[in-house]
Length: 432
Image 1 (cartoon, one colour):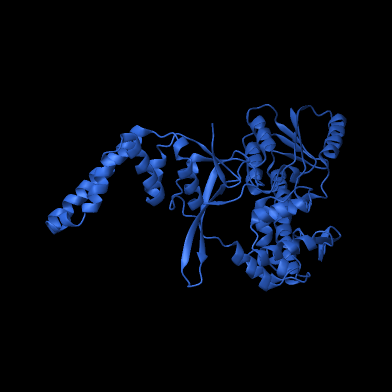
Image 2 (cartoon, helix red, strand yellow; image 1 turned 30 degrees about the horizontal axis):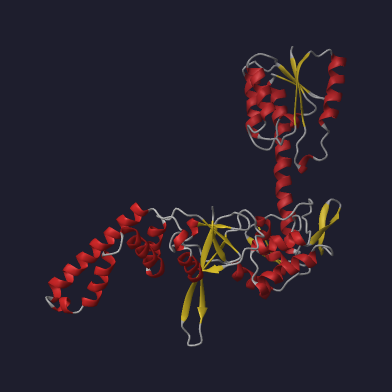
């Protein structure tokens, strides 16, 4: 006979009373010495035996028996081998095949005998029954606690679990962390602070989690969306009224949820053409832009575009905002120093002339000679422009689009700018 010594201790709480692996190894090694049992392999693992085929070391032992490496098992008790029907069936099947001759426990021997195999199956089935009943009892205990207003899991930040006989008996307010959690809700409800602003504020307050770490952004949002703080909690698919002291009111909680709702960003819907030609002069990061709306006295709403540092490199970058109007004014002032891709801009200009000619032909066909009599002043201007040098024409075209063009047209002409600008203290400077 060649035996494998198998010791298992579940890592789950349902087997707290089971012997440790070291104790099992000690007891069964002593038994092997007394009975002169030849142990060729020792396999240990810390894993639950509730589910079939989930124990890697048990599967290794089964493979060893199937290959003929050993034909006997030494273990502390039958429930160490199996607490589920699937793994038990694999062991009994190996006995039926004659590959597993004997299982030795601290008090019993099971051989390939019908009565002893039947007894082994009964003992392992009894362990499964105890396991199933334990699960039912745990669920019943959880329901009882919920009905009593006690959430049967770890209390969220701002609360503490009061334990009695290793079980949660009540939930009390954490005197150290609860004031900060309450302020966090109020900052969002009253001031409209974002999650990132709350994270920054918590770090300034040196607020830590139970593990001594800074709260992550996801943990902050999870906290702000937890109804436990106004006195209710969800367990399973049911809602319960807690007996713990609420930190906030339901009205404050609802206001926070409204604040947290944000409209999805419509990426690439709005063009901000000056982003690619500017860099932040304080931290060296990229420049971004956003649209703001201002309501004037007569009720009209005027949109304003503001450019500012993206704050990706430095979240605390002090660089202020600048309006697009002011940005254009400064670019126009720097025009003599700006390097342009003349070939690129000349092609754009020629396309614009062709488009204007095409429009003029359409208007002539539509209105006959009426069009010829009205645009004399415009024709004179065009003739004056044509008499200028090519370089001046390009610059005039560039400035015209810069000041009066659409965002798409501005983006096109800015592609022909070879100069990079630095934006610092609302002043545009050329980067040399």
